[in-house]
Structure formats: C-alpha cells, structure tokens
Length: 243
Image: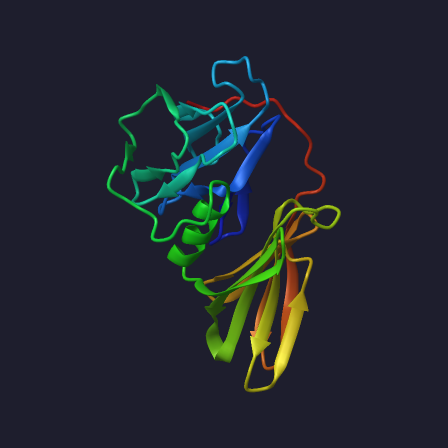
C-alpha cells in the first residue's frame, strides 16, 4: 500500500502469498519505486523460491528481478531517485532488467552487520536520521542495538532494535520497541508494543497491533492520540498491477 502522508490517504495494492523481508527493503526518495526481498519457498520455480525485485510502488510486480534461491543477503537500498544498491553477498541471478532504474555499482555500506536483515536495516536507519548509539550483548544469541533521533521541544525518540534466537511469542528474530525521553522534565515513556515509529514533519507516527497512529508531544506526555488507519480488517485480493 502507498501512504500519502499529506492527506493520510492510502492506496491499497497487491498482496503476496509469501514473506516480504521489510528490513531488507526500501522506498526511493520520491516514493515511486520500491526494492524488496521476498521468499515463497517454491524452490523449483524460476526464481528458486526467493528473489529481490524493484517495482513501481505500491505494486509488487517486478520491473527488475533478481532470482536468489536462498535467504542470505538480498534486498537493497536506494542511493538516488533511480539508482539502487543491491545487497548481493551470495549471488543474485539477473532475470529481468529495466531502463527506469540503474544498479549503483560504486555504493558501499559504511559498516557490515551480517548476512541477513541488519546490513540493510541499520544503514537505512542511519541514512534516515537515526544515530547508532550502542550495542548490548545480552546473551549468546541475543543483541540489543540502540538508535536515537532528536525531536522538537527537547524530546528524543529511541529505537531498541532486538536481534535474537528464541524471541518472545509474536516476534521474529528481529523486532523493535520504542521509548520517548524528555531529559529536562525527567520523563521516560516506554512503548514495548510499538513495532515502528518515526517523526513525520510536525507529528509522531507509530504502528502497533496492526494499526497506524499519530500524536503530538507536549510537555511531559503524548497528547492528541488519533488512529490513522486500522489494517486488521483487510483480506486477500488477487489484484494485478496496472503495468
């Protein structure tokens, strides 16, 4: 789906009977293209069961397609409106190309975070204004990485990014929670159920329990909380892209 943040209107598009790895995906700066990594497990198919695609947002139909065949690496980042970096560690196969977009062969991520989601997700966060603060090793297979973004009026939005084996029920091996801190008033608000949150022009927006919300930061609390969209009622529709 496509979210018009000026009007809070949504364009519903295609479903996928499979898994889209959102932490290995990205949207072009103008919102016209999407790069994503997906898996449907059909290992005898043409893509060998997993692939990276570039599509015209919000549709999933590929204009550029790279077969993968496993779930190491995959996906990528946009380096410009029409240029993208492919997270290619274990050999994509070019299956379809497009003159609309171009692969950026010179771009390199500043730091490598492993062969799965984090080598796309963490650089994407830092590109989009988040500061990498610190990493905590909580156990043999449990890491917590802290990111922060300064907000107006002295507030800080903190993202607690978990990477672990044996995550809590309902969580994948990568999952986030969030905090809001106002040091002057010694206020700390914890939101363990916020799956995503960010600052949108003059408001805070976040996702939790299948819904998208917004609110304003005033003094030592979050006010004027409003529901933007409840996605829980959506059901599968077999839709074709208009291209």
